[in-house]
Image (tube, rainbow, N blue to C red; front, top):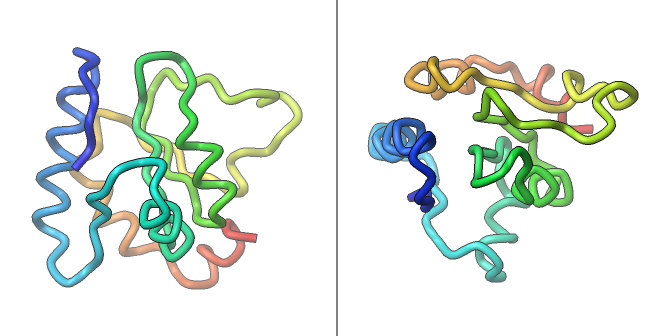
Length: 120
């Protein structure tokens, strides 16, 4: 479940909730941010979702990077710090909000080799 009250994120978050129901036997993180379980789950994940928050940046990006999972940025308006010198495209996936319904299919298609390159 993804929590938030920002009006523009309601569509993305509702689709993410639907996706979590369609995942089947894959693990879906449904716990509180800031707990030990949350950080352990991030560390065990291949991909960490980084939905837009209330501002033009979010701590979820830093949490994902710290945990070692590949951040999947779900925001058309997220401003990445130092983007002119940090090649984010090498270690993140930036996914358009309008295509969030096809995200799961895309993530399942990422090869182990491509994931390993991004995860380093």
